[in-house]
Length: 249
Image (cartoon, rainbow, N blue to C red; front, side):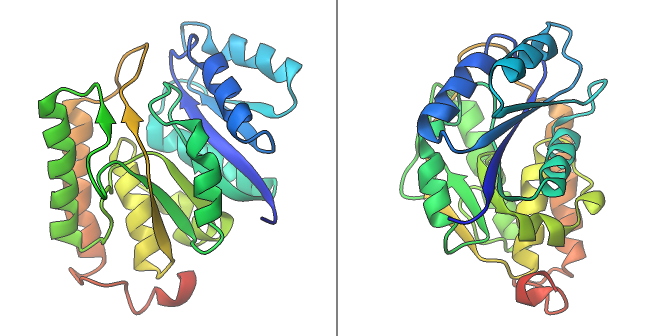
């Protein structure tokens, strides 16, 4: 595959996770670069990342300043990657819930797709260590997104993705308004609305092994409101926008 690949991982209080996830990424895909976007973690994550970058040139660090949220971290990380000419840009969690061994499968799918999504639910449920109520919330959220927007993907809230640079350039990172988990919905929706090709790769999702989840009621409320705004943005059509179609025109 032509072009460089960048894996973007936001961090906030992930000091114990960053070295293991970096090692796992490079075992699976030694050719990629890895950008950590740290939101001024008080636990010393940023200092540990700087030490890792000094040892391995594939590790990059973007110190993001005070905590600004998941969406802002990804936007700044993607912008950093686009400015440096990366052709494919991943998003991935730092907590090992996304298995880096799937990176080659994503890149293979990206040969014929513009956006590749990791799906926890297509062809069966592949979630480990989640309580039943959290699983039902996640699956229910996906059903809600599809029902309101028409977005034809099985796992619209998932956070393991591979974007082409063309997709990120077309959707307009400066226009992305989401900051929590609704960031996942908004970026996928905007790619679909513009007629980009979307593929789904089955993944196994394992809940974080250390640290704490960033999920909250405020994040859930933001996502609920964003879904309705996206539907309005597309005038409640159940198909890509004719004005935006043809690969991001």
